[in-house]
Image 1: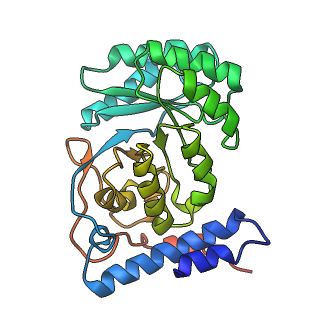
Image 2: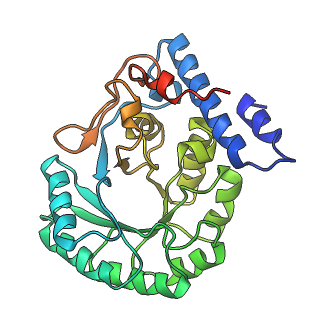
Length: 282
């Protein structure tokens, strides 16, 4: 049994919870150590081959944002080469004007995505999916709470746009019913919630079997390695929340895409002073 699976098994009386976050830290460190010891970039240690992966713009959007401000932010991402942007939605009628402003501003060849961050019930989610369809959105993300499996299955069956979810689900064990019920078309694993890069890779393989695309949550400089080992990873997400913790992390190129480097390991290092600033004591 793999060490990560043994660690996960040790939580059978406690539940996954914060334990999976701790396992994620151990798992990423172990994969980085393995890749470095092998003299391989992480993507090669995962069995992959280098490729260039598109990045969509997600940072700087808010669910209460003025339509003109949202359009301006979207065009800033277009100027950086991004071929898609993702708005934040509130799940109300104000979303329509915001989506319309951005859809009208985007040039041909740039997709619109939408994220409701679990703000809807099923009735509102159906309404919002219809509005996203009218705007030609590529997907609608997390319109319902993460554990609303029945709601997601019902929504996916009638939505005019693909449904994306997964960032709040922990491990393949919580993903399996979403695959079985065809409740999502785009899986969005979060590194910490999933328990590390190894479990994310396992989730991507199972998603591929079910013809589900993968677009990981956050950390594109790390997930670009997974994308090289998992062909169904279609997009990476630029949401620069954690990047200040790292020293010169990989950035997207002028075409709004990322290609991993060939240095051994995952290529991320703490920024000067970051460990001291965020160290937990007591």
